Length: 288
Image: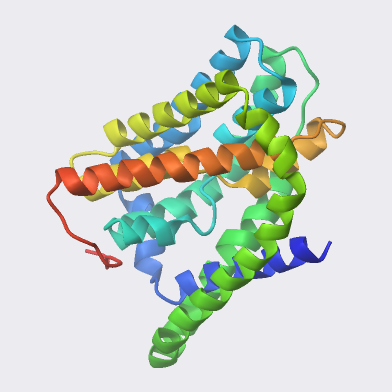
């Protein structure tokens, strides 16, 4: 499908543009900060999946919603999320470090989580490390690494190219996303119209935001970054997990519903945090 190809191209452009603004030191930051890395791991890979699984066990949810919530909760950071975090004033060191750390750790964490969830729900599940590595490698690690390399070799050109590629990638993403949303909107609307389902998804996302905020550490900017990352997850990984383990379920509308609700709620959270801090508009933050 043309829209899917354009969407993938837009993601590559956006992540490459982010890499043009990053350094090796920023990308590896959290691996030199074990306490911060541990808090991020607990928030994203322990608390949120446990809440999602517990919700699915306790409530009689429609299968697509149940699957989408669980798959999104165990997925890593989406590749274009750093742009949003940086716009909210988060430190570039923490943002890029979290993106790379979550991507690399997901190669082990996601297959283990899929296996554990299979035991809990008494279902045969599988999703191997190579499958995760392929997705996060192509959508996160490779374009970021290429961008960093170009920046090291051609810093002036990288600085000029990054905003242009960012605008181009954003335009392509919107152009690809609109037809997809139009196509699946009736199914999304049917989920939205069931207020209970919307409330369940919203509560999970709010719990993820609160968890990231509480475990983000003493730095306000890090708390905001982890709160957003805990709620916003990689839909590509989630859809790949579900395609492998639930091929007959129509989960795309449920996953997109999760993404839409998470986008709205994390935006509200960031705006509230900014107002509470008494800040005006914040530009993209550099590393410190």
